[in-house]
Image (cartoon, rainbow over all chains, first blue to last red; front, side, top):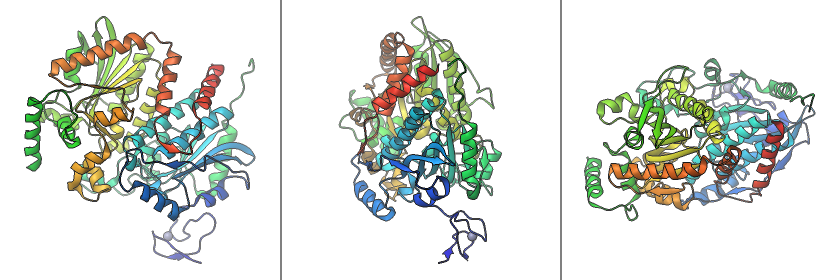
Length: 256
Length: 300
Ligand SMILES: [Zn+2]
């Protein structure tokens, strides 16, 4: 069954990579689709699958919104974490889902990202995070802001234990996620054409009162400004991550 | 115009009423926290320090006037001070971007914090910003990366860090100098993930509902104390009296924190940060965190 490309408006037939053959637009991937492309078949073991959001500031309507999103996306919140192997090497993987409330980071996303990092530090396995997020989950008020500090402090622990942290930024990665763990990888990869930035384009346009230049805040822009190590096309992601895992193994000190 | 009227009403209330904010609306606190003429970081630094020397620049790109930093002497103790600067009049407001920092501001703060760690000085941060500057240059120079790096480094900085929200605590821009061992708020300060105006237009789909948004967001010092996000509220009286209360808090806390082993200090800080958030179906997390600490030590 052909898909309609939202970018070039053509009806196209997609393979497992889900890249538009006509214009190179990257369609979003579900968790299952992403796992199929990245981890060794059957190796993924999910962690904290049952964790769900509460309503910390008792905001009217938030609980209904959560239920609605659970039903619509078949997910419990905006991130899925677990252990896996990639070309035979162990890793902890976290994959965000824009489909659940715009991938926004509330207590569950903050906690699960932190758990993934702590688990990596304990097992000495590299941590790989795929981001896709509109930013903080405003419905959780100050608690959503605090998740930025929480995830960044977990990244500090990875640094202290010399555990590798690899980021793969996908479309879009903005707001509080950009200003916390997304920018703290030892290596930061991005899918081509992804929007990556802190402030939203409309907010910036409002500040400078002019239109933003072409390509502003895209992955290519972020690479040229020095904030992304490499743009990697989807079909090369697994082998790139495998290369990174193999080149970031910490050698035990000889005198250990 | 309605806003101006409200502001004037608020000033009147401030002048007339006593110390407690309880009973005043969240929106009143929002207006008070933004009041032109409200004492800023520099005012408090000058009142608290016996002497103060400002240090400029991030050593990478420039000096951000919206972020003030330097070393002050308080009762024989050297302290590194970092704070947002909004400016005291219109001309200064413009120069300081109304307290909205560019990446250079956060990188200056980071440089001074690391310098403090190196020389065993505690750090005191004064937060008063609507948020980081949402400009073209800020994005080009990595405002997200700059804030992220601060969150990471401040969370494990091996020297005591005290944070005071003295006016507006706006989003990631406030958090960028807001991670520490203790977090206090002045009584009429506010702290939130987005401005009530932003919350109103995005979630309530009506920008005119900022007042309702402020209420729903639970962003006042009393709400945040209830949530245990802050340690305590500092009552607001005259500027001099408020400064004195801040000074006493600094001296009291540093007398304790400066005598703690640095590893313990960082553990408590991380434990506090790690504990914030409400989930169901979560599992025990303190034990794994302890194990990571043990592992960290074995790597040294
Ligand atoms: Zn297309």
